Image (tube, rainbow, N blue to C red; front, side, top):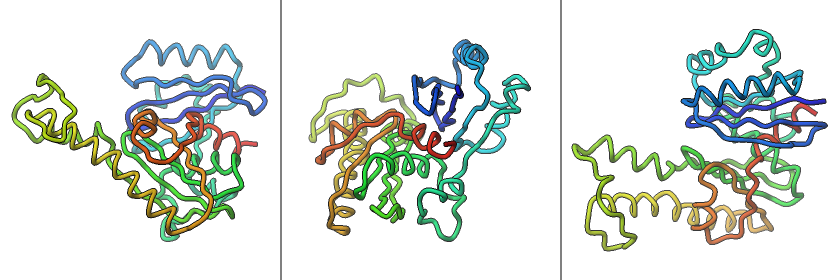
Length: 245
């Protein structure tokens, strides 16, 4: 059986092709690249996919606009998964409103839960950085959301009345131009805070924990983290495969 899965993220979308519950390939693309989008549709048709599993974090109007570009026969086989669907495999911490927990965070935890019997932490380094803890009984203890480095940089771009991107970037705690001050500061805010959060989570639970990292900025997390990390870029798709099995 062949099918595909699409992760509609805030900045990019990822697509995976799956055969016999094994991910054989996946790619990340920009929403602005129409040629690649058309090529993706052609590939889905050529593989004879009988279903398209989806995770979406975009608002309803945006995702409806994107889906409208697909042929009708493909629209008929779209299947969107929510955080509520993940409760078949893990217990989520958002007791007041499960729908408020991003499906991407829940699916990452489902995917990671199949890889270890220990407590685990998932760091998803995308537009924002999410950090979630799942114990060995598959109970989601909760998590933290941090702004990603690019998000912080973009806020300053919007605030200032000049473009600081032309200035020379020098990695120094004693920064001497606006770009260096902002980008060195955003790096500390985005990545060094993660170590503080991990310290507190691990100390609080006081047990063996495996830490998984996924997302487009995973390398920056790995380079700046004080803990050993397991990089699994397909973590969300692993979760979708579990839900569809």
